[in-house]
Image 1 (cartoon, one colour):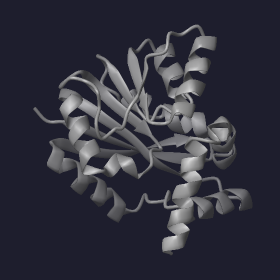
Image 2 (cartoon, helix red, strand yellow):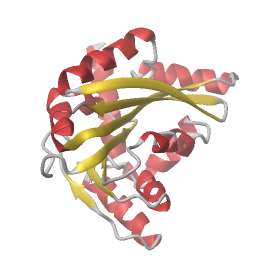
Image 3 (cartoon, one colour):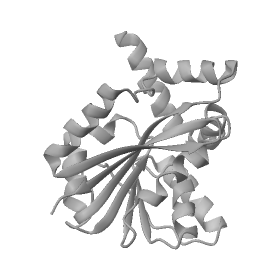
Length: 215
């Protein structure tokens, strides 16, 4: 099992770095075309006003969606490959990129700088105590930390079942009641009230965690 999880982490590292150019295609395939819907399901749960920070911006798709929605946003990602892809994508769309390279565990922003922090399908960095402490620090009182951690297929079919099995094998199918309780126990000590909802997409549903900073 230890070897398996080592291989899973290696696969993700390669996907986010050396093979970042394949990320959009891989995402489309493993979601059966629903990936953008899964990501966009987070948008309506953001704080309605103020600056937004996206953790692990990836190839920049959510940055495009935030701009289209008229929101001011900054993206943060540790991968230089993702940063370059996202920069090129935004510039092709005529959008000035506001991207920084940084670890989520050590954000280069002042306290209470953001009304919302968002991360869609992040790896396990998102539950590190250092990340949660930093997110709480940079959020304004009443600000929202929105996470899209997982999704599930609802339409059946052999391909969907196979992909669901792949997600489970790589630790990405954790929408059980126990896992929901875990999110609450992780976030509450950092000053968050937690709500967990599901949003529907084509033949699938996506979990959205809305953690509002008290104060």
